[in-house]
Length: 93
Image 1 (cartoon, rainbow, N blue to C red):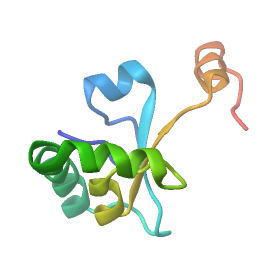
Image 2: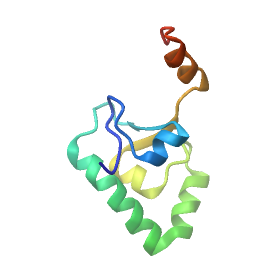
Image 3: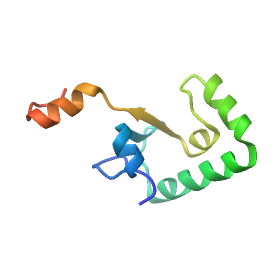
């Protein structure tokens, strides 16, 4: 699978290593098309216009790149404490 689903623990190896999740911003769960289109748009926008894509990330309020704005997603890092709570069996907030 190329991208993470909004629920569950599916994610790319890099996203798991950095403890990043792909979340929707429009209030609806991510569907299969958004999950497939997200990495394709990422590579397309980076390949065609990486400086513009970086500028979007620097100057948008949520530091979203062009592909995130188009698909309606946001990459978030989980709280470091969530990993601790999961490993110790404590309930997360």
